[in-house]
View 1 (cartoon, rainbow over the protein chains, first blue to last red):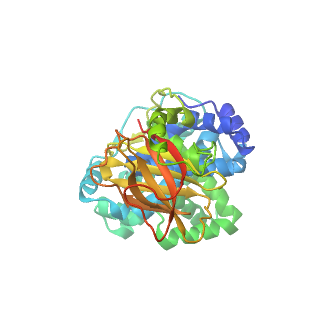
View 2 (view 1 turned 90 degrees about the vertical axis):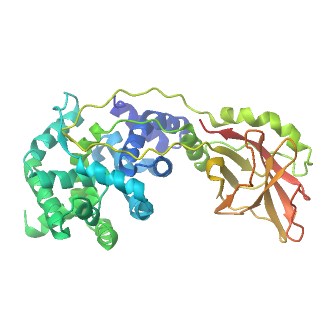
View 3 (view 1 turned 30 degrees about the horizontal axis):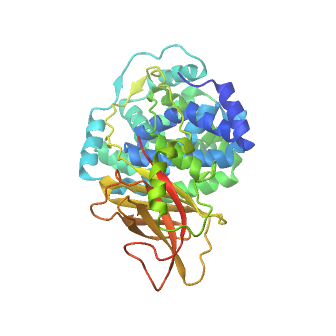
Amino acid sequence: MNPDPKHLSQLLAATASGDQRAFAELYEASSSHLFGLLMRILRRRDWAEEALQDCFLKVWQKAETYAPEKGAPLTWLMTIARYRALDLLRAKRPEINEADDEAMTGAIESAVSETESPQQGAETMQGLGELERCMKGLQDEQKQSVLLAYYEGYTHQELAKRMKAPLGTVKSWVRRGLQQLKECLGA
Amino acid sequence: MTTEALERTLDAGEYVLGTLAGDARVQFQKTLAADAAARAAVHWWESRLAALNASIQPEIPRDIVWANISFAAGLYKAASSSSASRSLRVWQAMTSLATAASVLLGVALWQKTKAPPQILVQVQEKIVQQPAPTQYVGLLQVAGSDARWLVSLTPDRKALHARTVGTHATAEGKYLHLWWLNPAGPVSLGVLPDSGEALATLPAGLDLEKGSGLAISLEDKNKVPTAAPYGPVLVAAPVMKSI
């Protein structure tokens, strides 16, 4: 269950004013969500832990930059985590060894399968419902490219390698997939 | 939407997805700093694609992560010795303090969250599980100095990592020496930096289960100790073993 957005907003505001207890509570309420995301993208516990530390230090230092118009507080925190994960991947992915590489290839080869419809929920579920509807309108390769990039943090080059397709083709899949999503999701 | 606006929107989408890399990513980050429309486009994608996060299973991080964060953020003071002239006998005294570290760190208890909703499309997870290595972490602060050290010992990797928060003003001709507090006598771990980070290899055969903590001594650069400190012990502190 996601933490209550209003409570998270209050914790962020208190953290911004230097309230250490609020910061600890914020960590307690949200760190498992951020860590799950980081593990999903980075696939290595040591990297995910490093990224999680960086994220919360940034939150401690920059909590005042959060504003409700930037979206739900958990979304804001997850966005910070995701960008940190991408930065780490860009810096460290060359370190991935052969065993990791095989696992990654396997993940892609077996990737992308339709699952149940999302359950009802609040704001996130509404967004998910819209996204699901629009994703269904994408060609398989477009959908796969977008999702692999989001969940695995792949660059164009990595996508091309994993999907065994020319770089230009992959770029086109991503670009057209995004364009179609934009048109479908609206302004 | 104009062609220019569409291109900006798609660039923003690629930035949020993470497909931009290298120069393209750096270039777009520069654009973001100067272009409010680009920032708005990024925010639009962030909020729309965030729905994909709903399929990600929460996972509880190890307690050591919070310990590192709270230390680096300066949320509490590290255990420190007020005396700058303690003798070597401090080793024995400190052996009883190891279990106190968890109290200092104020580790939170966690409740597992329920599974998130299913997502429309799910990439099959094949996370390369890394067994979490056991770590021993000590927090040291010398009285009268703003500098603090977070020292992590990872026996599985025979690795020592020391990170300094702040800078310690070590007297001319002196340096800081790090020790492991073993009941049988101190074990030299090497030179501790005045600032920044340091990596080192743990001594062969070091059994951290039998020790109790870390200590820093102030040594003369011309008289490097190996078996025991020559100079004064500035601080000694217990370590916390990660769960």
